Amino acid sequence: MTLRPRLPITSAALALIAATALAPRAQASGFSLREQSPSALGSAFAGVSAGGTDISAMFWNPAAMSLYGNQFILGSSLIIPSAEIANAKAMPAPMFPQTPFAGPGASPNSVNPVPLPAIYGTWGVSEDFRLGLSINVPYGMVVQYNQDFVGRYHALRTSLKTVDVSPNFSYRVTPEWSVGGAFIARMVKAELTNYVDFGAIGQALGLPGYAPGNHDAVAALEGDKWVYGFKVGTIVQPVPELRLGLAYSGKTTVDLNNGKVKYTGVPAAFASKFVDGGAGVALDLPDTVSAGLHWDLTKEFAVQGEIAKTSWSKFKELRVKFASGQADSVVDESWKDTTYFSVGGVWKYNNELTLRFGYAHDQAPMDDFHRTPRVPDGDRNWFSVGTSYAFSKQLSVDFALTHIQVKDGTINLQSGTTPADPNFFRGTLTGTFKNKVDIVAIQARYNW
Image 1: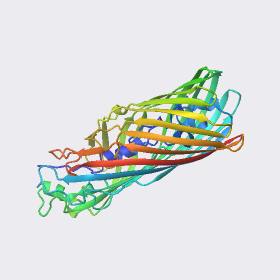
Image 2: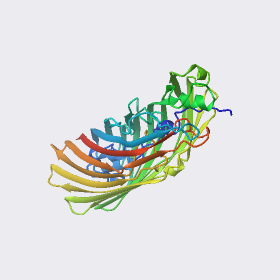
Image 3: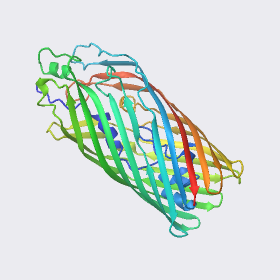
Image 4: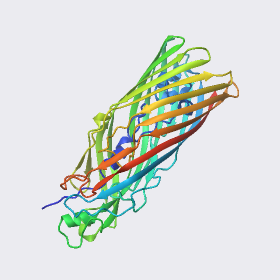
């Protein structure tokens, strides 16, 4: 039997890098970060596509700048996640002796806190035409498992860092109708590692002394890339009390062709096959449509709503190419479209103090057979509160707290029965992730 072992960093690992090349959109769950506005967080991002409550809504809909004067915002959201796996079990593929891989069946919190800064500024060129600039971190997380993690052949460390620099414009066509657009330049940097089970590979090749779990090495992938995207939006105000917004973020084609793979501890028998070098991936990632509503029921109280649809079903496969000439790795992702919706309220208590609250539901794009330890996500319920205090007509401060309940996520990765399956030399991994997220956010707004 002739085997052509494939690079063990496949589906989840490179998917994370590729996914960070998405143009900003009304963020879904999975591996994206919605927390780009402390003021909007207070109402669970309800109404952001309809303009929200300040210029930070330009992250979702650039037409929102037409609603406000010259403004500068400096904010940060501290995301405090917890992701713990319980009842984890891992086994070699069926062709090998069915001895479970060594390692604890539970792993402590594997996700580190992530601070997300956000900067926004606008300037009115004329009464109707405005320019803006936003700087955001739309993706960023660190997932780290212990060296003895039972699923170490699937993941050890995942580190993502991104920065968006986006010039925006808006134009008020009529007093009731505004349009806008933005160009996005995004720097993506990623580091992904896992163990490689050369014991299983050696036994499959008939090499003496090899067995699953007895010859491990580390594979590490690093890459960085500038990618580009766009977004457009419009806001209509049919009556003074009601605003409606619609925004679109286009599909992004990713060509990450400068990744580098490095191996540590490869047995001599495989030194010519598993070599350091380049790796790349090209794929299309989905577009998103979002709609928002802001309705002033009275001068003091407004209700808000938001819905966003992301076409994750376009993420059908991930094809990885290797500079060494190794066979392509093709992974069936089979993700599904997701919907985010939220409702919220804004109560202007007096000229200085404003209170906010909101609820949201956010779907995860993967099912139990495609969830990985790199993206241990599940459906989410958001509960948010926030407040603003105006010290003067120029200076205000916003503060928000959010608790996110994440549905327990079953992981059920199967090895397959032939070496053509990407998980064949990783083995199976089953278990349950128990997740939650808390967020603390603050920003300062200055009108000029």
